[in-house]
Image 1 (spheres, rainbow, N blue to C red):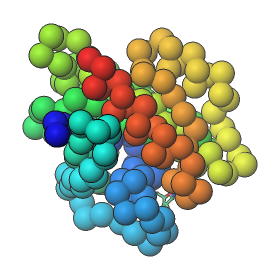
Image 2: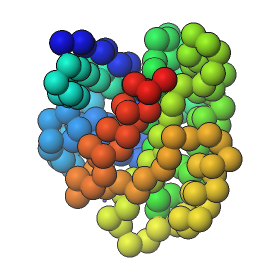
Image 3: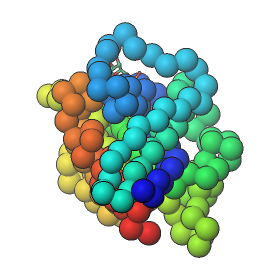
Amino acid sequence: MKEHLLKILIIGDGNVGKSSFVHRYVSGQFNITYKMTVGVDFSFKTLHWSDKEKVRVQLWDVAGQERFVSMTRVYYKGAVGCVLMFDVTDTSSFLKCHQWKQDLDSKATLPNGSSIPCILLANKSDLSDWAVPADHIESFCKAHGFVTWMATSVKDNKNIDKAMRRLVEEILSI
Ligand code: GDP
């Protein structure tokens, strides 16, 4: 059995749902009062990928340090994939994705120098007051070299596992 250990970062503005995402993905729960402690924190999830392969996903959450926007290199070190999340009801969290992606690409690179795979997640898609049109997300996604984008709802457990599987697939294909 081959085991891959993948360090995956989760970045994006505060309050978009990052901690809830990690908690949902790892424990299967959504708890509105749940909040991780401030500081970089990480959680594990093991995926039985195939008969011959096991994947241990190590998710790193910035947990409350988003205000710095520019994260330290230590946080990015050794990362092989990234989830960039924004809140579909909050335009500014979408506009900030540009900066987040630039910061990521300048600090986290694969040994061959190319940028690490990153998936763009439009979270809180269960809410009716979307402020960011899907075609804007689509063109931003294409222009900035994301693996893909998906509308997620951590609350309704929509596309959480699917998004992570897509990202892991991309990482393993490199
Ligand atoms: P973080 O600061 O990015 O880690 O965001 P949190 O995980 O703390 O979530 C911020 C708030 O958004 C909390 O009140 C969550 O309960 C709520 N939230 C997270 N994901 C969703 C979602 O998919 N839909 C809705 N409606 N609320 C969500």
